[in-house]
Length: 183
Ligand code: XMP
Ligand code: MG
Image 1 (spheres, rainbow, N blue to C red):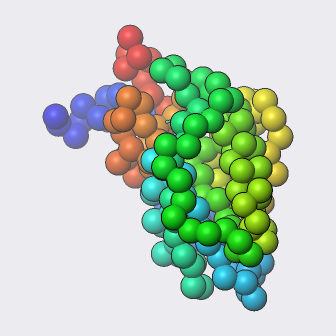
Image 2 (image 1 turned 135 degrees about the vertical axis):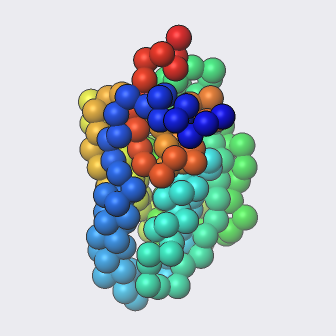
């Protein structure tokens, strides 16, 4: 596949690589200040949050641990069902830990509100959320997000960890797919 084939699939670049990194630096400064006297356990949600986790963790000038969860809230389509299954659980014991969930995107909010309750019930001292993207117009439940990157329109987006049929995760920017890709 030629590089230009990928570019042809994109309708619009919503957030550039530079904008992502500037925002992650800004959020990292807030996180460092907020957690100055507490050690953070970053919990990344597989697979979409891999890029955010990698860049946020390296931006943070603090000791952090990283753990991962995989959850599924989608059937075959692109709509959240609200029924969340744990596909891969954490390895860490959360008792007394300060957990910061790292997510790629908040769409309906159903996945994260479920995850928040789930992790809180495990005895964590605190659980907060950092998400790169949020679609305010798609919200079905309000999720208390402490650290948010960008509010974006209610379009299906790919790149920087986000996929369409497992492709485009490796794009450096966040983009809207061209209509011809769906048809
Ligand atoms: P909810 O609706 O529960 O969904 O907030 C969160 C999860 O849904 C996925 N998602 C997307 N994936 N482009 C994607 O590639 C999108 O526009 C999109 N919207 C939601 C994503 O896995 C997220 O964690
Ligand atoms: Mg995800």
